Each structure stands twice: as C-alpha cells, then as structure tokens.
Image 1 (tube, helix red, strand yellow):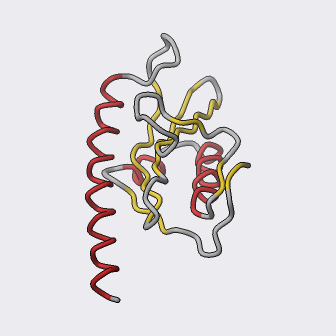
Image 2 (cartoon, rainbow, N blue to C red):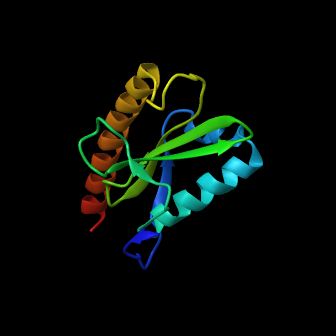
Amino acid sequence: MKGWARTKPRRFEWIGSSKKDLKKLPEEVVQVFGYALYLAQIGQQHEQARPLRGFGSAGVLEIVDDWRGDTYRVVYTVRHIVRVFVLHVFQKKSKSGVATPKADLDLIKRRLKVADRRAEELKDEETQSH
C-alpha cells in the first residue's frame, strides 16, 4: 500500500457501464478490485495499482488481476479530489501482449473526459453551496 490516508473516504462515481461490468466479473476478481478501489477512496494505493500508459501521470490507474487463466482490468482516476471515478472494468480478450487494446483505450479517454466534466460540476456545486 502506498499513499496518504484521508480522514473521510471519497465517494465513487461510476462512469458508463463500469459498475454493471464489475458485477459481471468472478467474485474473486470483484474482491480484489473492490479492495483496491476502497484504498483509493481513503487516499492509499493498492500494491497492484499502476499508472495507465498514455495518460501522462499517475492520476489514471489500472489494476490487473489474473484469475483462472483470464485477465481482468479496472481503470480509475484519483486526480479529482471530489470523487474516485471508475472509468472502465473489462476482461482483456487479446492473448497477444499486455498492452491495453485500442478500443478500450479510446473508451477510457472518452470516459475520462466525462469524469473531468463531472468533477468540474461537483466543484461548482460545492462552491455555490458555501
């Protein structure tokens, strides 16, 4: 575990079908991802969390879990203080290499833009309520 501890956990915001997709995974994988996301909520980082290549910083993270010969991934961002945004949950189908398929990267990029806009809305709402 890496990172600093928060006093109050950040809430999740699930982008697109990410929550529904998580629920479709094997229970063992859901437990790993659930714990990793909990750590993100409290400002820590799961030992398997790695920055997702192509996103410029450690603000977009990926956790890869192999179970019974299949590879599963969860991608989330912690770059906004207002929420932990879960961007994509999927089973990697390609057997060639470890790279994230282009279609999944494109989806993650689109969902990251949605998360960025949503974070701005939440900041604006917070500013207006004070």
